Length: 415
Image 1 (cartoon, helix red, strand yellow):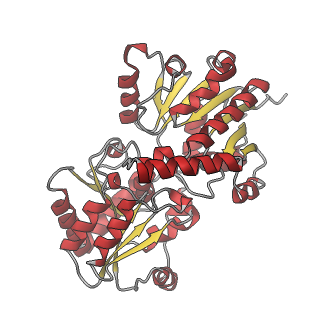
Image 2 (tube, helix red, strand yellow):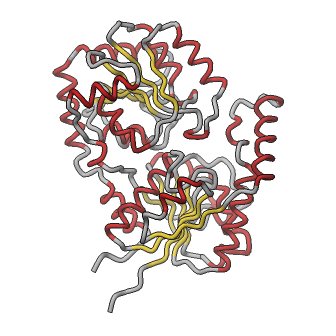
Image 3 (tube, helix red, strand yellow):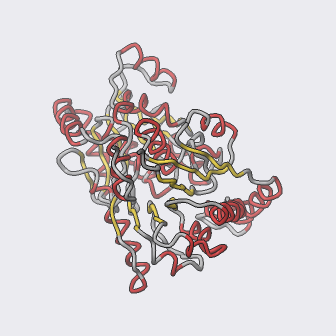
């Protein structure tokens, strides 16, 4: 007799949809779990997502997942725009993005909490933001799901939003790195009763490790004003200060050569269309380098493998303690020589044998310039690095990520 598949609820951020039609690193990882589950069929997923027309259409392709799309009322969207405008333009709050979706998230939490209360799930996975613990606080859902809720931790927690006891009693905290787990241990201190484990991020290796012929390579490069003869340095990620874009542009300015081009891929907040003051400043800085820097803005996730494939090297110079940036994992999985920094959980994915890892600090700009120049000038060294990267990432794929996830949340093996 076939055993019943576990019904696993994934509670997403509430402001980017799954399927990940507007981008988002966490959303892309969740979508990878759903894709592999379509093949392995070990779980009945129920995904709580904000409504998005394109995502609703994409969701029709999934047969082992049900989607609960929550559409935000117009009045709430208007209220959020007013709050964000005030935070950005009147209060002049530097890190104003956290004010962009306050009301939308509260509405989302209310709807999800009611669903959890009225329905039964074998397990509940809270994705990343600690405000989501409010879905368990409402209706005392934490009692109903005691021993059944998991926290998939991607970023540093600085606020428990009145849910400290619930946060301290997860079935498991599933961190993307040892580094990020230790930050939560420090935040919760003596109140902590959680079991911690690490789920290493992985992506679709077959999709990202591709080799293009010269014709396709030229076609894609031409889309961004690049020629086949150019040496292309690729940066990809969210367009904000902590990702090290300012330092990278200043480093690139030191090594300007006509045939070396910097391709900057990404927007301030994925596919939101917003442009920050910092982004505008970086555009101005790039003007000093004539045609050497190309900005693409937000690029849909499915096009990213092509961009890695046309790049000669990838540079991800994070200047904050990045827990486990998906861009680092994408670059390595694509088999590219990577220059990055000793930040947060990055050294748990990249290492000195397969990447160049720089120390953050006052010399970072000069070190970046030197590392980029050396990597581009030494073809043999770059090729050796690429071989080491491919060996390191040989088992980095969606199936391994999915199986690791199933093991952590204790889903029975396939019969």
